[in-house]
Length: 121
Image (cartoon, rainbow, N blue to C red):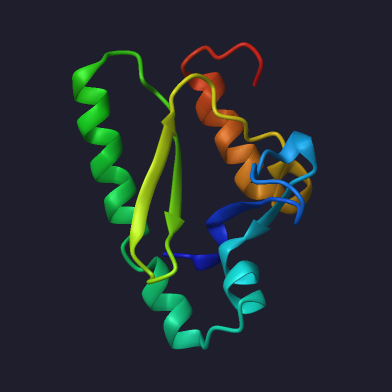
């Protein structure tokens, strides 16, 4: 798995929300974990299971409700390094902020959204 394809929302120091449109930023997970001064082995360890777990969550939810074509899964690591799901957004997760960070990822997500008829993609 290409580690730079995982994106994170980073909030401003004076807010508890990480919303991009409220002053947050979009970073790669690698940039965030390097910012936290983690060694390369720890970076790989922290995100090793994200693709498998994300797919598992997506399959379970899609089986429960038809029409769930895209999902934004918000994950968090607690202070002990345990991974938690904060929420799953299934109503048109926003990928437009990725346009400046990673045009290839943005184009791919936009293509997927258009393929099932999402008009705002």
